Image (cartoon, rainbow, N blue to C red; front, side, top):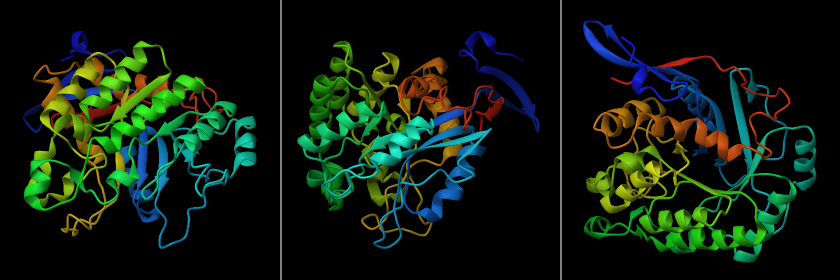
Length: 359
């Protein structure tokens, strides 16, 4: 039975009986993952396989932690499996890793050859000062590259492992304050106002951050932002009793913050969802030592549908916009524009994918 009247754009809902049970099936184009952070190179293959099985055909790889002390080799041509007819990896490059610019000649060549890329600064232990961030943003403008900002001040949140509040206090865990996020959001909004170049905030989590971004968008500044599926579904309560699966960065925050994010979905202040950190041992039980993590790719769409769309909290059209139209809009007109990749991973006629939303 088709449910086309409730179907968003190119996505079609239907019902199907499987083993005597009625299942809701969604069919449509594959999804776009806007911000994958791998906790180590050993997780890359599993992440790519899980994302493809979950209906993604494009992923923006923001960062991959290196084994040991060796820095990752970032300035190299894409591997043969990075761009195929049905799969594309858009690589992010940190051009200011050690207080000076690196790799600019390579990126100019990549731009000429229409190899897709974005710029990003990964700062687990250090944060770009305003002057440095300004220079990076100007270079992004020169390269026509999207600059993705991780709104996290490492100096303020370096030892934190969850939201700073009553639950972190009761569990004796160091918390991550709102300030660690809001300072970077405020700073980069002012830099965008000066440079006038597109910036995307990777995963915001707080009500105040959303308010700042909403006002900046109303001014006409070229700013977009995202969050994770977990931040729409859960709060800091999920991390109570040291639940390692709820250790996210940015951290899951309060119900008031979650409601602010849902409101941002409805008024289109929020442009996309992304996975974030991927890769952790199922046997890791120590909350302090466990790496940051995220929801499993296969769980994301069914849970969002069941917990947010079916109760009428958000519409299915808004949900699918966050995984498809939103990411395309963010990448449009940049060095990672999906329509300008000169045939390298361009997915002009992607195959239809089917999601069982009843799982």
